[in-house]
Image 1 (cartoon, helix red, strand yellow):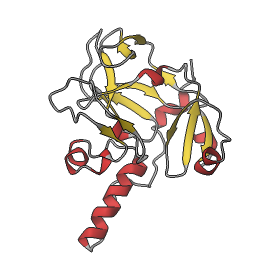
Image 2 (cartoon, one colour; image 1 turned 90 degrees about the vertical axis):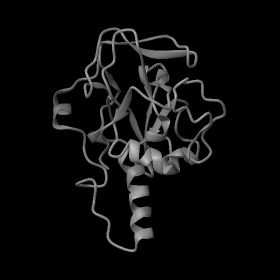
Image 3 (tube, one colour; image 1 turned 90 degrees about the horizontal axis):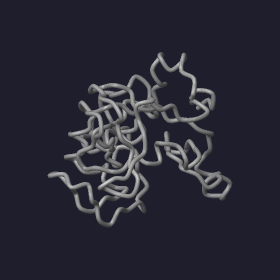
Length: 199
């Protein structure tokens, strides 16, 4: 992957702001309404490898894997650090860096994401989920992406490398060739990103 395909820092819509959350600590809230499908943020940061992370070379920061062995690292003062988990999230991803509204988000409502969409490290654990949704899973694990009901619910909205994992597993289990879901394993962000400048 070319490092220059990612923004140097995360871009956020100006209608997002941190505020106290009933779910956990500080959350990220809409200060004005979003329509379903509107872009909320585009992750950016410095590019590192899993080997560098394992060697302790990545500075203390907020980071997200965008490929099996590639991650973006950003300071923890970014607004994306405040996106709390919900088992019925108001946001989801459309590629490895773009987060959009899953449904209409009125002003004053918290922007949440299901961590199963982008967290695939088996050791990851939220022992007691406090999202309060009817579909709450109670305990959130880094292996939740393997759950068939989540694969069906969020099809096309996992980070591409995670979606590729379970599509490959289904292909292997079926003994046939799976139809590719993405044009390429890790599609580049949409063309509109070319004109974006981090604020």
